[in-house]
Image (cartoon, rainbow over all chains, first blue to last red; front, side, top):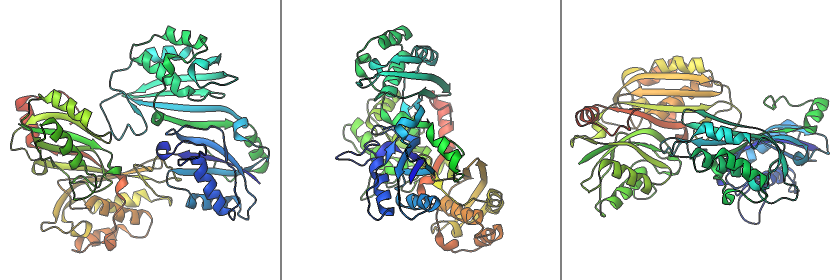
Length: 259
Length: 259
């Protein structure tokens, strides 16, 4: 039986989502917990977004196939008990067996948080601390150039097909907290953090909005490949196509009100 | 020259405020940084509240005596550069040389945060996760019995003079987030966490408001000495008497707008 779930994690102590030869990963912890509920049978977990080391998530979407005896609700409870405190699985439900989150994801939404105030240990765990006052209006102007369907080679890891659609970038300040929400169909590796690094340059007055637009036209990494630190980034939401259809056909366990 | 500062820290990776034979402490880190700016001379740091292992602070108040060459602003910058990311010193200013934060503190304010919703790794770093729905109104009613001047032996570590004044306890819910603010003149060891543990029992329906009032009358630890976990607790504010007077007499560096 194929399952879909929303996964939340504090990325601080993970070497990223994807299993690696060394290092604790989100996928590794999820697969270890699933192995324990399925009589030591290995279960492969797939995700909509393979977040990097240190990146957090509240809306990661995963899928896996489980043929054990537990019903959905029992399976959710068992996983809850087996997972470490920095990972939680929500809204577990059955989906069509062809569901693959990476391909079913239509829209992905990331938030980057900046604390633009005096050093604050409690705030800077999940936000990048920036001491110099940033020009938020200039950052918002520069962001506009990136909206739309573009070759994003200048703002992300190499990819054979580097064309992506950014639906929206919202730069907002609420007191010293600045949030940059980036909504798109899909993202190149490090793309959000590269965009944030460019916007930070604009906010500091080191680069203008025009330079960002000009960089986008190029095919090489812009601004020397600078990326903003991982701990300010959070994968907030993934909207999937087929899972919703499967859910409405099969009903759901009532836990996915937020999706 | 005597200095006062406000100190913020993420208590997660500390064995408490006070220096101990083993374990990383806030006092230890502050004294190590001060030692480096004073030509290896030991400098003793005093605090208004000796918070336990895992307890956070945004409004801890410290004082120390420094006779080096740096002016206040330079000293603040040097400390900022030397301290680890989980401690920050704010509003450093000169005070009267007799200033001792522990005795000058008139009012201390703690906040305990509860996340009363589904498991959430990102929220439960600084809040206690509680799955059963809590009766917040009952908790607020029970809290009222504790306001005033009482012998708090039932709610804190042994002390020769266990009489303390609790000025206010506010229990509030904003969605699934419940905050318990406790304001008092001073607190016994573990007093706030003992009070929170008692209120949690009330919230779960295991104990009534009357039992809390009755426990207060006793001289033994109530409810088997239960204390709420440290990571939900934060020392928010310390109001000191003499430092403010000294500051108004000597001027301040303009950084203490929040105090």
